Length: 203
Image 1 (spheres, rainbow, N blue to C red):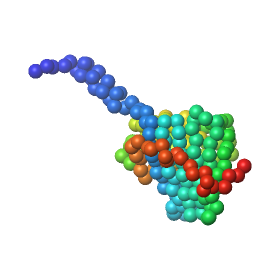
Image 2: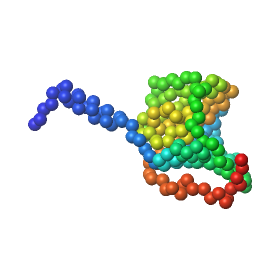
Image 3: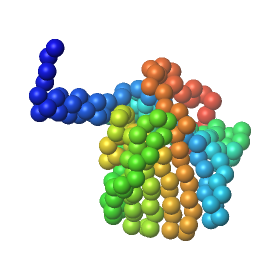
Image 4: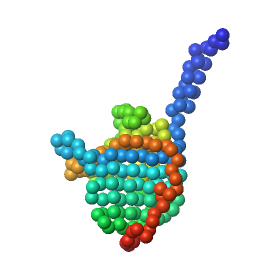
């Protein structure tokens, strides 16, 4: 029977652990979030959903509330994006100049010691603070990293996949986004197609 010295056994364990802890880059994934509004009393109410589709450098986000459905489609290699809005029976399409926005008003980021588990993914926590008094509590996993992270500009420097984030404004408003599903299955290209004849284009 082969016997390993304690030093060699420890080295092998460290190598295996480091290998398992490495972040996996994911080129296709779908993330679904539930959106909750948190009252001053601590009560929460669901106010909508957000769906994120990532395929290579392309990204599509759909924000759904009872009053509005808004879709953003962009590619990080292109300088334009499409916004679709459905308000009642009105369906509007707008082309906008897309560019990665600057985080120049981000004044602080603080890693927290808290660790949680969301959808069986271990998550770390970070607090982001902006000059206008807004803060965001972000929970993310380093197990996987999507090829597009800027479906929320604040996530640009987050080293992993964000599974929950809570926006806190200076006025006391609190909105929580929490992932309910992460699907790493391939996404068909028609998810990003738009039937422009159904929409009224606006400038």
